[in-house]
Length: 153
Length: 155
Image (tube, rainbow over all chains, first blue to last red; front, side, top):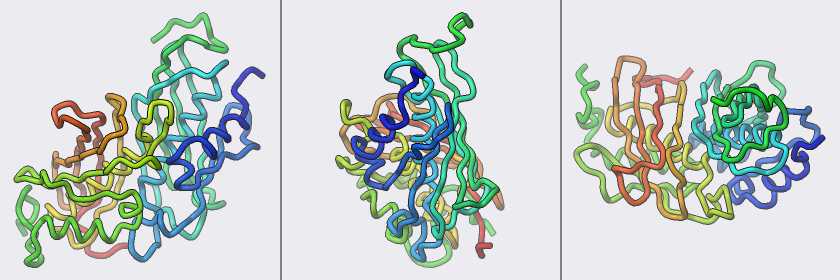
């Protein structure tokens, strides 16, 4: 496998990225191939409300942003700068601060110039997601691992 | 009930828009954690929030750029505070969705954001948020969102 190792990605997030370290994001080293699983522990400072009942919605957004970025990065043969074009999140249910927040992101389409990603967020082990996100990243170099013959968009 | 016209001050009590904005900011633990504050440039187009740059908000240490998730959170705080303060909400609004376009790199400088209301209905408001660093006419990100508004109880 040529893809960036999950250990490398986890090291970036947990040791070299100030914001993700600040809020305590972790990368699951057992993430299935092509996917990224992440987690953020419930902490009072991440609350939306003074009663500390709910995660602030931006924390879900930030976790989705980071997981989508890693899922896109995991598709690349070698590290390559990418810029986020957009990210959209739909809030499906309240994310209680009782449970840790889990995210699973995947790249569902990659062209020579754009990586399309999506992410599902769960509250603890509950089956139904609390949020879904989709986004696109612009690639700066062409280092595509597969589908090299496809036309760029 | 005429509370839905934009720019009408909160009628629920005698607090000013700026006071209501400061009140909600102080009640959001994560806004406090990030260090979000009211900007001195609030005017008749509404309040402006400011996120002072700090190293712990960085996403890419090579470029010292602010993490995209931090910018998103800051813009969300701006939408919530503006809607609560300017629409005279009784409770903080809730997000239905939020969509951001990243237009340019956000360097190691303060961020500013302003929310405008595209449509305010009885239950839902469609808003857009603009976020900039040096120049308001050159935003680093823009976002649109739908918020539940007009709630008196939370279910």
